[in-house]
Length: 167
Image (tube, rainbow, N blue to C red; front, side, top):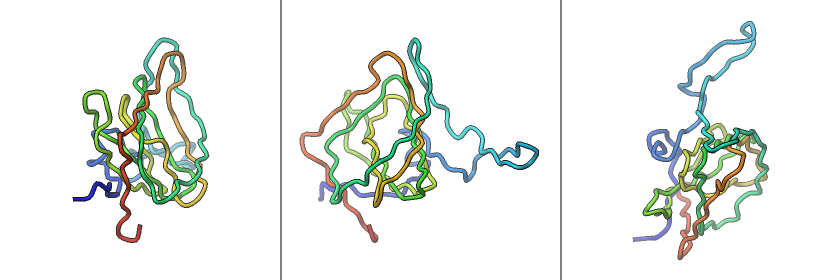
């Protein structure tokens, strides 16, 4: 049995314990602006908890991950959710882990298309942004405000990612 983490396609049902997959397919569609604009309505509900907390929108420009890739840490945000939406139309990796007594368990790695985003639920263990192939831009919606909203945890041994089927 290998310790390597297999990469699987990002699918709504498989990702549901960790948050929401964001994509226009299947979304509620509203025609707005006199029919000149299609609105894909309420793709995610971003949460921000705590006094003076607010929801902000940022642009992240991510350097591509160096291959071969090993995951050595995870992070989570206890006071709010976090959206990542790719703007560069490139595949990217989404790595999450179940919570096991306050620490991240074995990671699960998803391959997201350049048209899929995610909304990590509050307090969900995930790896920082993993762009592939080239510098990539992401629209990020998350919480800003007072309070400690970042927790990091490191694995005793790195978890290698196994790319299959042309990966």
